[in-house]
Image (cartoon, rainbow, N blue to C red; front, side, top):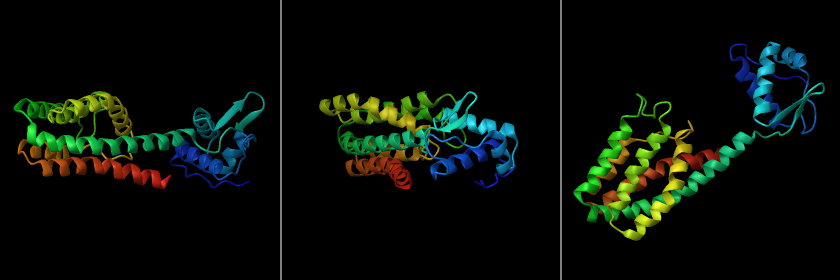
Length: 236
């Protein structure tokens, strides 16, 4: 079986993708042994060390398994990590759909019932989050969890500003799922970054006492990641 030669400049990453593609198309069936290292190196026109590292990546991913003295065998033709990302994104979509329902109404009520302290909480959360962003508007390395906490703090402040105890209690129970989905989305480069202008639009509408604008701004803010998730799920 001839494999498409890997470009010399990309090395391990290219070989990983080439081998993953061969597995996905059924070139090697589950339970069968893949060609030995020297054969793959010759077919792909790369060094044996490059092939060895690529195979290790796929072993770690759960697609291959090495047996001492026997060779490397196919465990799965689908990358479990990609499957899990698909499941995770589906979960994020569910959370976003419920967030839209809860937060759009909360923002509407907040525009009618907010107090000055509520607006200060929203501003403080957005300011703290902005301090953790790099020049591209994404959280600095190592600050993802705290960045998510500030985002959740803003949205909880909006919900609390509705001054509806049942809504606050419901969102408080739901907020752990919101945070988990948010952290996953922030760690997914395929997902859009958080845009502060969208959050400021929600805050401004609430501050001006405009319930319709507050609801529209909230829906617009949350529809962006929902559409991104739907596009990624449709592409899988």
